[in-house]
Image (cartoon, rainbow, N blue to C red; front, side, top):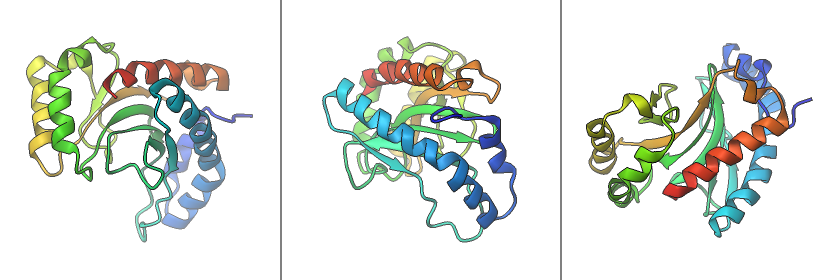
Length: 202
């Protein structure tokens, strides 16, 4: 039985029609894993950053009609929320799982974060090329770092700084068939490795 890793049944939750049926399945199959990941990695991130991190499992409470297309657990140093600051995320869409670090449009720190990342662009460039970038956390599309030129990367960070809806997240994605999703121990070790890489931008 899986305590941490996502299975094909978890991905199939996003094929269920209707808000209530999908939410019921999400709560029973995926959310317990997100809570377990939250407990494990809040301690892990606290250890590797030196700052206390708190887990925030998505509740999707504002949804009244449309069922969620993804779900996640986020980690921040604020016990009350994560959207207002750069944060780590572990979660899944219907076609992939992900582990990311970045800033979304709700953050008042967007401009300052973008300037810091522009100064750290060489660090971003040194992240393995199979890592991916997301410019909209609500959409599944992500671009491999290997496919982004220096100009693309700089443009994405300028957009984060200057555009109200601008976002920038970097991390790794996993298709349902990926072997790291085959066992809890393998998945945990993989996520630790990714977070060790991403914490360089923290």
